[in-house]
Length: 243
Image (cartoon, rainbow, N blue to C red; front, side):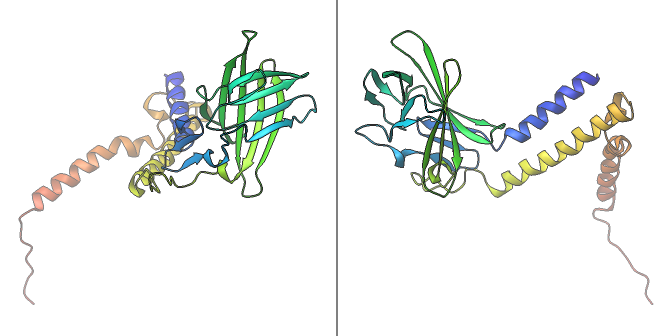
């Protein structure tokens, strides 16, 4: 019973945390958030090569090129979104078609993950971290985080969620819907916190793990009595004694 309650509580809390952080892929350089805003890197795109060419990583070992939206070719990198130059040799580190958007809660950043099979039949994965920044655009390769996986950072205004100019939409959710989500999450926090307190601090079990359980179990009766009172009073004319 306790494990089931805890799992349900954690699932509900996870939903509330991630509800506003999902970004659904529109294309390889654009995703749409739950509130209708978008992250769109299209303005950075170049059609005749990478937007950023041969930028040295933070370790000073390798060069990285990146272009959002449209593929480019550089040496042995063909139809690439990301290309690494290591010891004078180019390696495709991700294609446009493979682009996948996620939210990294640890680093508090939206990410685009690219993948590609190189000519050596080795799968390479690149994670691009997007940080909203109103200053000058900055592309900073971090390098190979673990074997076969590479990290890049982009900071700039195009990493910021904004209104979708392609549709003229400013919000995908109505104010009422957003309010419902907020209320649901607040209630979930109250419920989860109360359940955990009852289970681990007060060592309660069964219906007693519900916070203020006597109120909630008696609420249906209160509502029923209220409804019946209104029905009984309906149609009755109130009279007053003459003075």
